[in-house]
Image 1: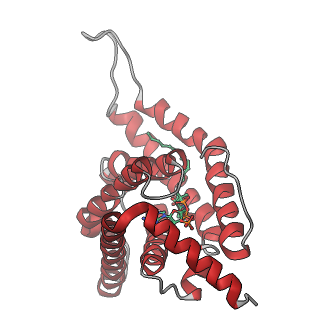
Image 2: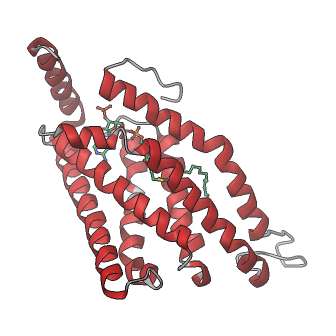
Length: 241
Ligand SMILES: CCCCCCCCCCCCC/C=C/C(=O)SCCNC(=O)CCNC(=O)[C@H](O)C(C)(C)COP(=O)(O)OP(=O)(O)OC[C@H]1O[C@@H](n2cnc3c(N)ncnc32)[C@H](O)[C@@H]1OP(=O)(O)O
């Protein structure tokens, strides 16, 4: 059990942090996190309604595509938050996380209509939605100084299962895209051309899939360290900070 002295120290630390980021940044982050929580809640409701009405996930992606595009792209602001220093987290870790999501949405699922109904798309959509509702509501309640324990618990426990499941969903979706990319030659540049460069999107996707092997463990261990810090009060020094 935490003593009242410990609780006082934690509160003091939180207030000191808010003072360093300033009231304008706190107000912006509160607005941003409320908007993102709402956006992902809207997506969750749309997905449940679609499934209840149609009894299948075929066509679901198309029905939520615009909302997903908007809110996932809006997450690029997280890089701006880190770069401005109004959020104390690594630009590198956030960059990999956000860019991989943007890439999945814009350059895989939006671009290759034939794969929009594969099961793995549903898997990552569900996982992303649960993760983001939890994550943004955690930030919102924390900024408002009223963080319920179950949200804190969910933020730093659900990812243990959801992160690998989401990654499997993403990798299977890229894998399903490969034959269509090879057949269509999309986003590829063949020689000869006036720039004298060649680019094969098919092999690029294979490289992206391989890049999950070194990159994903780094994100996962980062989250495990955050978990130890937030749930168990351990002091962690990040190498990339
Ligand atoms: C060109 C193409 C490139 C492709 C590259 C491909 C390779 C990719 C390989 C990896 C692929 C990953 C794919 C992802 C899949 C999924 O997402 S599956 C779903 C499950 N996902 C998760 O569970 C996500 C977990 N990850 C995250 O939460 C983040 O994205 C993160 C960046 C890893 C989180 O890190 P971080 O922000 O450091 O952790 P926190 O503990 O949440 O926050 C740290 C402090 O910062 C404060 N903060 C952060 N954001 C905000 C905010 N918006 N508002 C207010 N405050 C914020 C937070 O409160 C913390 O503060 P303190 O506690 O005071 O330190």
